[in-house]
Length: 115
Image (cartoon, rainbow, N blue to C red):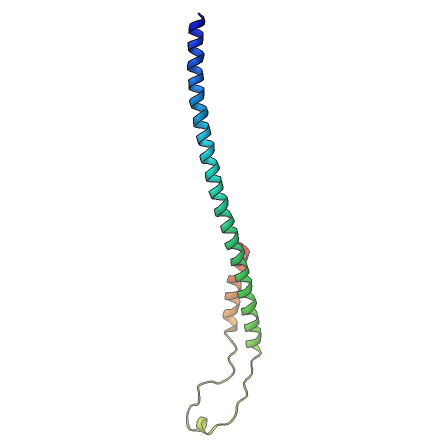
């Protein structure tokens, strides 16, 4: 009876030792995967912060440009060349495409909200 019990326990120890080795290997793999995902997440966060900063910069630059362009004036001087030709083709100061600016800035605001 004791020898049979000893053999059963030795077999159980062998099975459990194999399961421990498998669990240890799985834990090692899960830890490596987690570290890789963590590094990728950190990289994504850095890129996201840079993107957010760039969108803010673009919005600032465009807002300044369109505000200044809306106020643009041109000092026109009489020119003998303009009298003989159609001139340079400019009728007034370039004021930017003010209507299109709303769409562009609106798009940037949507992108910014995604951050």
